[in-house]
Length: 322
Image 1: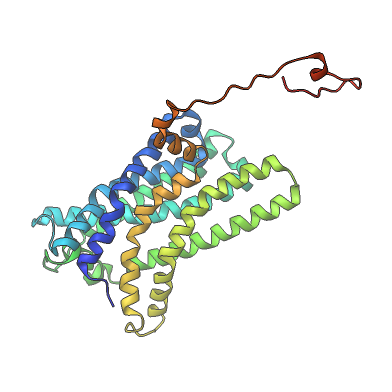
Image 2: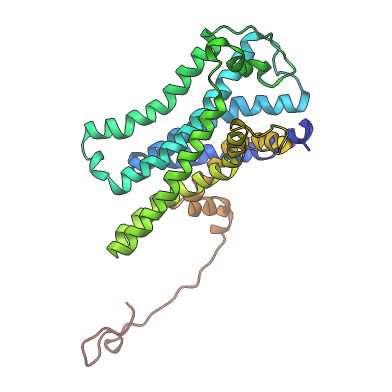
């Protein structure tokens, strides 16, 4: 059974406010600390969170309004084009950034020599992140604003039915946006799984705890985000690939519709995944939540008597605590 619109409204509304708060808090945590801000492995996370915040404040809010009232928030063509453009660009940018994060972790861990100079960092680090943002912005600007669409606006359809222009246009007839999602889902899974296999192999090969600890932090930072993306995006994309291969679209049609809806949660839950993967952030969150207890906590003072017997015995080894 397809989830009714009024239930979809509550499912999206419930986590929206906490997600926005966590997004802002994590961004503040990353940008305030100079060490975290300058860390190369955090750059894609910072950009990802900015894109997520834009989507939460625009497309997600507008979709929530639509599911509640079954009509566009504003009944104007300008708003309809802004809705479909911002919603699509932010969503696709989020997926591409997650995919690039999975690829970049291989560079950071196993090919760090590619980032030792400014020129190499520009080519292998900054330019790919810029591409992840500019490509969807440019591509969908052409698709929605320059390619003509003969379909009339419908304010009772999500995004006023503008996304259907991609499939109805003769110039865009060979393009299907879901193909992008299928490819991104497969690439993310492949690179995420291979990363953990390579990290585990490196751990047992080198037996060096310090190196393994650094690898583990970067791998864990990706793991939660990639897991979220894989669980919510891969199943419907596998079903869509089966449809494209000839499977009847009546098979699992309700599940396909519902699973596409739950892909909204990739944006909503990404800030929580980022917060859980950042070192030291959980402690700050706990301290912020329990600030009222710190001023009223009285800890016992331990007094240690220092004597020669405590400090040194006959064999010359320290035995007491100083």
